Image (tube, rainbow, N blue to C red; front, side, top):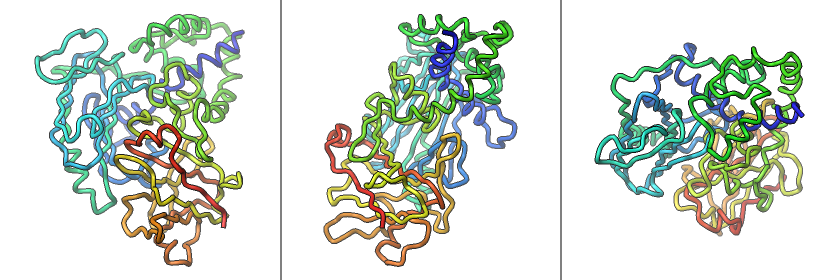
Length: 423
């Protein structure tokens, strides 16, 4: 009985630990020379590459900016001046459970401007008369900002977009140090971190009875020292369970997701998970910060069209039909090498190409408007495929398709999808 409760409770709160770990690296870790205080914006000025390890499955299409919001001292103002027309941008607000509670951006706001006031759950009214009020469900939130960048030569334009973002923290705000998330495989540290966050960020009303049922296994909001009050038998159960539970997370990655023509597609509840706790936990491990399908849709392939695992010791052609990928913004394929812990990162390669898409400079189309992308470790000999080369690692790999502002036929699974054939 306790073992099953530990399994269910771990799955439920694992995203909180991942959020705490990402926040700590960004805001408190003394080993990070670019750490930034809560309620201040941190701009990533460079395109992500194979050295980018601060978040799993980074993209190479947008520059990231992020703000770790702490609303315990009062409202935070988020202002963005008018953006250039035709360029993708978004402000995604996530609660500590990794659900999106608000999104602003090109899809909803065009070029802007926007003026937002973000308040904690105890604030019932706007602090001022002007602007838009966003009420967060807890005291902690992550504002994750994306600004389109069309390759290295476009960085100045993307930087100019980032400079239009302004964050005003509450006057006189102070922030207490948090429990340091050292390892989610250490049950003592795991419970201390998630309990601290649960004390600041209560779950939705309909889930509080569920959480109350896990009190005996140490999930106690606000009690960072809960481990010290557990029985020896319960502590041993945690020690015996924690590694297998981590291993199980990677197996839950397809929970609730759809398979469309060989591609695993974003679940309908991606980014706003409801009670799909297995999906929420696996996304926190393998794709923290993924947007809801109405804003962006993600597809991933592990196999070729013959259902054989993708491996860089083989050569493949990824064929995009002439109809393209139906979006109202842009799309791209990213090459990832899977890690032992199920995280995914870009692959080091001689041409420093980590993704390829409809905005990639120098791409060669077929006569009918379709596109063939060479996925292999060595440079292709054919000039057409050499221009369209997406280098692979030496071993297993995954190919991910990102689509921004996807059209209905793509979200509903009716669009013709790319195929992958081994050469």
